[in-house]
Length: 333
Ligand SMILES: *Cc1c(COP(=O)(O)O)cnc(C)c1O
Image (tube, rainbow, N blue to C red; front, side, top):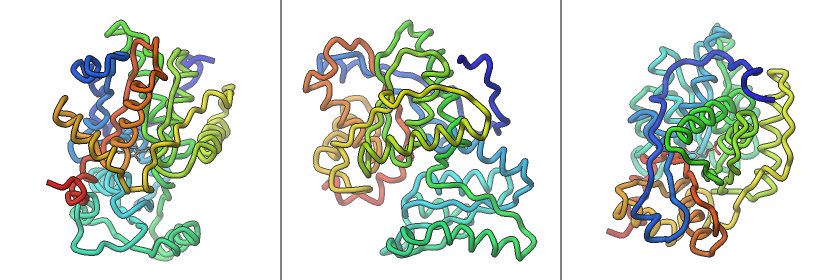
């Protein structure tokens, strides 16, 4: 099945797209491997920066269609997704309520500060409570707003579900145009995987748009079994919601789970060095939670010879700049 027979649902126009596709010539020469390209999805908006905006274009259109006045979503304390949701809610005149894992140990910084600036309602929960009762928390707050005569729309972690999936399905169409323009046919597309929606969208999108590229998600938490399940679930949800038939061979769901480091939100020394190296060599700023880890994985694969014979690879820069600042001490300047 090709995209010609699938109609995209309504979306708001919120992201600055198309984003540039840029070649990293100095790094490619240094590694003496494939040509490395970066899809600059960190440029989807200065404060909106990152992959979540592409998903939220579809999610917010649906929330407005349903007549909702409030967005409830959740994530880690420095969640890029929660910050993007808070900023976009303010941009379209909705209220945002963020359910966050953990308490800040000082005054708000990074993404959390931006959420406050946009006047999001913010509830902090101890990690254990968050993990055990997240579903009930969504229900409880939805009911709270219902009782006030308001209507809340719940957005899952990272906006990764059958609705948010459209964001990276549409991005594949954009990439296909980029590849044509640069006359390349990249064998591999690499992205960081947190809640799996970007990987799921790219994987389904490449099949739908009949592209040859393999998609590799680099896990920043959990393991490859988790992401296989999560990608299958999101794609199934998308197929069910929109009555789409698409054959997704499980073998196409590829995840590297060897670069998580000490844990979610915790970079290793290798990750920090990768961020410094890319900043110095290419002026490309990666982040310590997602893209620094995924890029370290890509460099490892090139150095180990795993990508021998590959001519072009694309790294999707999914954003995360505001996560750099709360970890200033880790960089050791
Ligand atoms: C959320 C996020 C990701 C991971 O995307 P998922 O769709 O949640 O897997 C990658 N990079 C950045 C900067 C993010 O904020």
